[in-house]
Length: 244
Image (cartoon, rainbow, N blue to C red):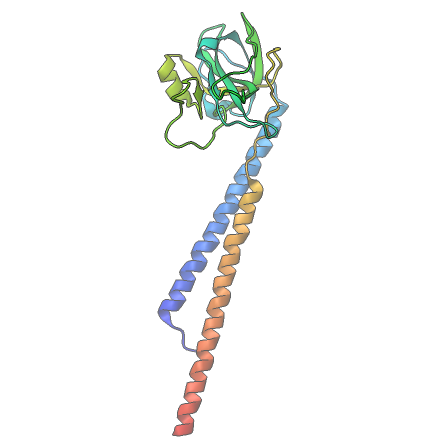
């Protein structure tokens, strides 16, 4: 059977690429499974104290943490477009001035939107004096899709997202490189029914199967095309012999 060079090379390239992408998605799934196991272990580990000493995000993310300090309501940021049970609302993000020095951002919880006034903030409480905050260290206060950069022309406290480094530069606060997702109740009327971290392991396995399916389809198409070419060649040879 005569093999055509360029079609065969193209099919081999497609197979090699799709198989490699399938393995890459499988490796991503394994990494996420390992991270899920870490998160589960962190949930049962002792809480880590947050103080003035900077804690690298890589060493603290998803750990249970505790911090003592005073909230700074004058620096509050409301993250817009954060629905809860299909109701529009905000996340209330506020710096905590730590007892021993330094600052950390705290995602205090969810607050429903005032439906009559988009920039109107519903009433909630902020504890005065030193308060103990317990929660989970997260890389950010939640990230939502936005066009351009955060902020609102109508109300500067209302933003789509808040970046820790940018916020630190804006306020001059020496912030820890993570946000505490508060879990303890401080009598503030905020909702803290946080969604569990979703790492999309099932999606990675689905993509893996799709890529490998494409590789199998490319092989099947190549074999089918080669068989058709061979039959066509045999028919041409038979016809030539007949005329001879």
